[in-house]
Every structure is written in C-alpha cells, then in structure tokens.
Image 1: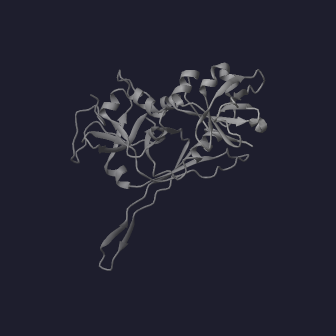
Image 2: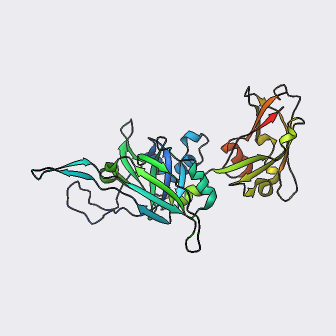
Image 3: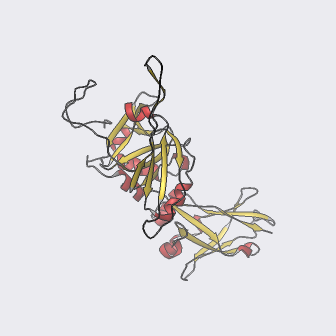
Length: 329
C-alpha cells in the first residue's frame, strides 16, 4: 500500500535535528478545486492516475475536481500578524498572519470566464496545490476511519478579479485570488506528496488532469420561431462558442445524445432526429415530435445533451453541455 508524504531517506524526526533529506515548499504552478472535506488516501494513491482521472471527469458534478493553472505570476498578498505591546513591555498577538495570493495566467478568455463561475464558492471547495516539482501540496489529516489523508487547504475566499486590459506595453491580465482560512494548515500540517503512477514513475498531476478534465459545450438555438413546427437549428460549440462540434465530430453526435423536456412538467419529449449540416458552421437540425403528449401547446421547452459518460462514449472526449430554453407559444 502506498504511504502518503513518504520521503526517500532514512531520517524521520520530530525534533529539531535535520536529516539529510529535506523538503522545501516550492512555487505553485496550479492546483485543483476539490469538494470541501475530500482528499486522497494511501489507497487512492496506489493508482493515482486513475484516481485523478475519475475525479476530474466524475459524472456527478458535486464530486468533480476542477484543475486550475498554470500560473505565470504569483503575487503574495499576505498579512503579518497583529501584535499589541503593553506598558510593561509584554506583547499579545491579537491576530495571526493571513495568507493570500494573486495568481496570473495566460489561459485566455474562456478559462477566465470559466473561473468566474467559481467566484465566492469557498464554502464548496478546498484547494489542493501542485508545485513546480509536480508534487501535490495540501493538509495532513485523518478521515472518519482514522486513515491518513491528504486534504486541500481550507479557503476563506475565492475571487476572480476583473481582467486587466492589454496595452502596448502589457499583455492582458487574467487573475485568481485565493485566501487561506487557517494559517496553521500551511505552517503545522502541510503535506507534500509526489505524484507517481502504478509503476512508481513520477508524472505531472496538473498536466494529466487537464487532459482528462471536462470541457464545456454550449448550445445555441438559431431558430427561435421553430417551436411551432418542432424543427430547430442548433449550433453546438466547444469553449466560448469557438469550435464547432459539428465540424469536429459530425454525425457522431446523434439524437441519442439529446435531451428535450417540457420545462413545466419535467417530462421528456421525443427527439425524432438530430442531423449535422454540411455548412461552414456545421449546425445540427433538431426535430422534436410535436405529437408527443409532453410537447407543450404553450410554455417552455428545455434542451441539453446527455451526461459526461454518454458523451465520452459518443465522442471520445469529456464534455458537459449547458441547458437552453425556448418558448412554445
């Protein structure tokens, strides 16, 4: 069984004597937003690649890990502890130091917009860091069964500032600010774990996670008046409506991957066909069965695609679609 936080040297001491093998915290290159209170056990670390892959494209969104990075600049915004000195010369620390950092990236507008959806969600996510040596850095702890765990850092703020616009002298600035809720986690309980596969070979967990992570797919209805006939022109795009799924995958995306519902009742509406068009944008023609009793005479229709697992089977990539709504009046 794998052992968390294991150094490849003989000295392991709780005293102030230092062995020949020393670990130092390194600059972060990125990390993961992971569901609060979750982490990695020694059993999970045995096949860490499989474990990470399962987390970053988990079918259940509440269980999913979200890789973030790489960081091009890190600006520390830490605050020193606040100490009061009394007349007799003694001192009292009123407030411990506070860790905050601003991370800059060059991942572009789509990633910036995706990050913006995590604004203020510090109650939902912890942060598991990846340093420049490819190690996972987090907090040592124990689960309910008493087994050692590598947890993420507790956050008091996830903030995605406005981008700073490009000038002739400065590239566009995209930013993420993270504040740690408990400074003692970094000082007293920090844990570093090498990322190794089942053969014991090191790998970069952030780069690997990005190759396995879920990408956004956006649906757009190009025929708002189509609800009467049940025929719609739907543009399907990866990212910020940048890459046409129709051009990339064509007929691999079928009616079996389309989910239509009566918004009022939640009942499914039969999808008759979903056919890609041989045009430059390559949209799809969606036909819904207007004779289906759940097709509304008035009201709203909801449209999305099937889940991550189903889309991977169809397209060989991990995708998740938005939901669009249109009126049948």
